[in-house]
Image 1 (cartoon, helix red, strand yellow):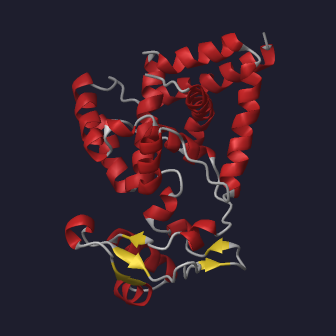
Image 2 (image 1 turned 30 degrees about the vertical axis):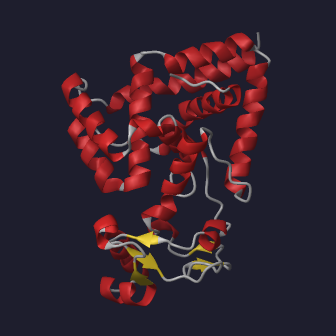
Length: 272
């Protein structure tokens, strides 16, 4: 038995206790929770689990190094009206001026994408907001939602994960490489203590209230990343939660969750 490993796991899981502080005094009504979960399922089908929650965990564990790979490789960068308004303000421009100078009509028809636009960008060239001297995106703090979601919570990646039944890796992304390295080191330690690995699997399969709350909050965090803060804030209000957890409040448990999901993926099993 690796006592150091056990203590590490216990410390990471111990952070879940503090998540209860986000609950309303009376807790979440089962009826309200069921309604919100139904609304969330309409937004992201349960058929995408565990890939939606797993990629949300990977997202909050990673740290964009602003290398520019996304900025060059992704050719159709969609920008909603809200994105345009936010980026224009960041640049000190009018929304109309920003849209005329930096965007063009979306490649899909309005029925599918509403009022979204596409950032003007040549194939295999950098996005106009990428600046190699910074380094990276000069609108990083206000960038379009699709840029915030890439790569883990991009629509294309979620589709690929569901179709291929595994979590995608991004070989050219230094952030993903570093994260996968950390996960592998921890997984290697787990494999040397089979009982610790089994205990951790059972923990995330349990109906423990803290685990259930963690998984709900992780899904909500994924919703915030995928759809934006306004949509997530609406769900938070309906649940009566005090606020959305910040990434650091979920990171410790999210790391263990990601480790287990990737271990189960290797073994060809699941948390179900």
